[in-house]
Amino acid sequence: MAAQGDPATTAGGSYFLPRTCKWNVTEVRSGTVLSPTYGQYGQTSVYVTVDYPLNESTPMSGNYFLKQIMLNFTIYSGTQLIMNVFKVDGADVICKTVSRICGFFFGR
Image (spheres, rainbow, N blue to C red):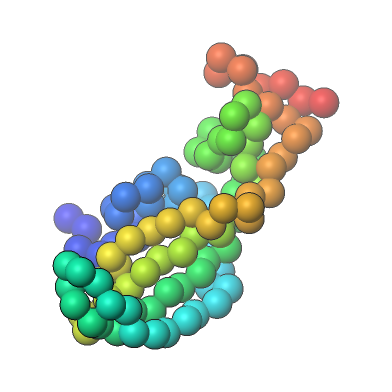
């Protein structure tokens, strides 16, 4: 059983973090957040760059495979648990030389 706060089981984690990917922490930001639900608390944002090999576990954007994305993990500083995982908009790198249509691979 995975631990609570495990990025591989957090929303989107299993899709964007397959076992075959390589990832690196790109940036870490700490700050205080005011939330109507949790009140004021310390939060750390960890930005992770994820690189994918070209295989069946590679996520897709439309009909094209993703080569790289960036994820933002928000972490509750008091317990170090992951609260949210967001895909950073505009950071996608798409492999336009190979696409998949109906389960078949097509190279260009």
